Length: 303
Image 1 (cartoon, rainbow, N blue to C red):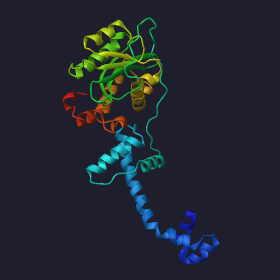
Image 2 (cartoon, helix red, strand yellow):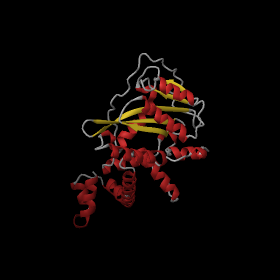
Image 3 (cartoon, one colour):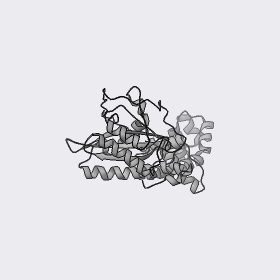
Image 4 (cartoon, rainbow, N blue to C red):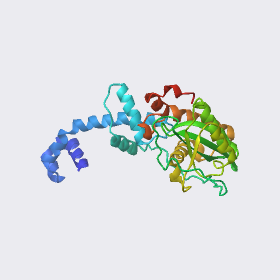
């Protein structure tokens, strides 16, 4: 019907509105109602075009990682700073869909956890409650693989503070020995200034986290070990979610040509993740911004 209205609007002078409505079987009242809203439609189309360009810019800055929720949050922050009104998430999603703009999607993850049946398990102190009232209450850790070239692997271990979802410790190595996860834990302890006694560290039941050396490192700093009960992904969902985002938003899901490139791009992404990337769990703020706003500025260290 809209196409008929447009045809009538374009050709009504030589033929007349009444005649065209009769030939095209259009109700004249409907046509006049449509015509009355033409100015408003043109204004909306112009506003949509301008908003789409803003969306495209934000999407490019995020390295094409952001979907509608984070794009909407960035738009909201920009508009608030400029004294403009907020924008509806559904509208952003519609414009992204119409413009063919989309965030990166999660790929299947290769299983790296190898349980050690002989190691005594730690109790589950988290029980799938991946929240914390302050920094250094609950940490979670895991590691994943990164393909290098055709037949090489690099492993990436992490420690995440559940209060802000900040990556507080990490390490990369070309092996899956206990040192991989121990180095990540030491990094977290260092970045948090060594004041971590009583922190719960939650992991899966992989042999690295069940090792004697890792247990000794936790005991050295007064860290309480925790392990999922069942050994399935839901018991360490926060760590799983972190790696899903990492592989979705970097080239790690496809692999890197060499170790140096993998380390460099991962380091760049970590800096962006901690300081800029918006996280839905902490009110669409970055982890560092969330800690700062919650009065934890003294813990804001480099990356």
